Figure 1 (cartoon, helix red, strand yellow):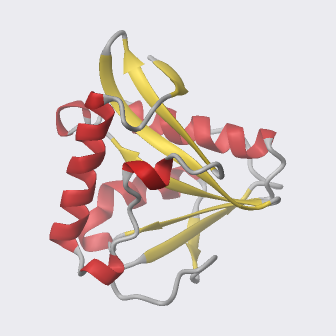
Figure 2 (figure 1 turned 90 degrees about the horizontal axis):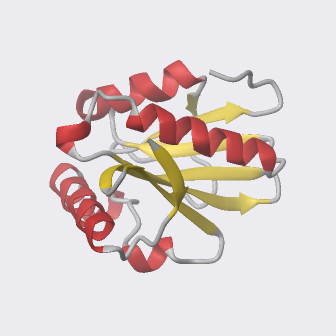
Length: 157
């Protein structure tokens, strides 16, 4: 598996991101969907990666710079057929390593409630993320769970 910067408009990545957005809209009201579309993922404050085995897309994820010491994980997704094979954890570890290399002190994320997103919560908790309040521009929302990690005390997973 290789993880490298990628273009979110690449056809297979675009299809995965489109699936992600559609799924988020099925699960949450529009005002509670914080997933980014392809154009938003191309903004300069966001770095986007894909994980591949040769030409096969195994997943994707992005890191958004919120400030010089705080980053946010965005667009973590693996295709349904590739779940539970380690791509999600590999992308998450890659993003954490990049956040540390950038000198961020904190890495945060927003995801859905535990009843629907239990596997994601388990992945993030196992990596050291803990529940927190809203950060950045987020507001309290019953359809959102906020998690953060103190990178100054993080040890590699």
